[in-house]
Image (cartoon, one colour):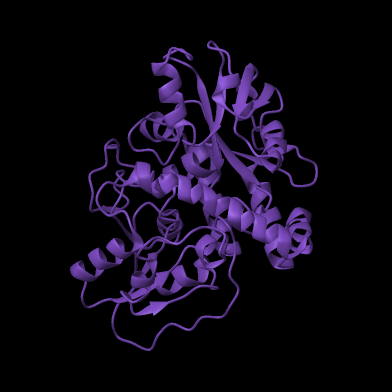
Length: 371
């Protein structure tokens, strides 16, 4: 690991920024992931000067930004730095305040938005991917598989595949109010619609539906037809690790779920009904138009861009930037301990009041998004 290049992506961001609308819990991590930026935290755009640069969580400020620009309160070309969870995030759910090991810092757009470019898309379209980088990506991929790692690394109940000769298809559910659905798919936009589309195309298949873990935990709101979705499949699984499920199924059908990416890592056939970042490069079966793409990529190139070049990783104890390879080992240790990093254990010890507060906060934001 000593021969790897030093992490450097966040060092580009050294200017002054107004970070808008971040919770007290997230503010700490904004500072840690952007250590050289000069940050001012404000609650709303009303406190941001017209010529300022802005930091936002994903696309959460889009409507307010558009209104401010229309009113002449912000410049039309206002720089916006967008933050989001990385693809190897934690042991535990983000909605339950599990500490993030990785974030993405995108000055162009954000990876789940198909309506506009992003830094990840630019990497996938233009990066030369030299052979040493691809060797590193292959090694990282093999280590992910050996450690059975996924984005959240939750679920530990044993699971036995059904005794059937029908092909097993996994259909992962999503939080229906998420921006990844709003910006990433145009036709199939609910879990029920996804299940119905898969059933119509493959009546012979045994459909295994896995609701999103945030919804199962009560941390995010269920979609209006979520109860019907439970009846539109052959089996429902909840507290089972995604890596175990992916090992047993033949095909995975998604809207924009990151499960599709995790399935590609495991050499599974992936069918996309939306346009996630990993669609459109010749690696998936795409049932919906992909606005951009067109370049043919191999899996190593996708891994290099999405896991080596795009995210930033922080050590949970030292708060220093680390390489993805070290992040994998830390995730594996935390997963083996089955209680995550110290911050996760602290959350569990704070009791039902804090968990109820987190649940209400997340559902309130879901309600606002649904309006």
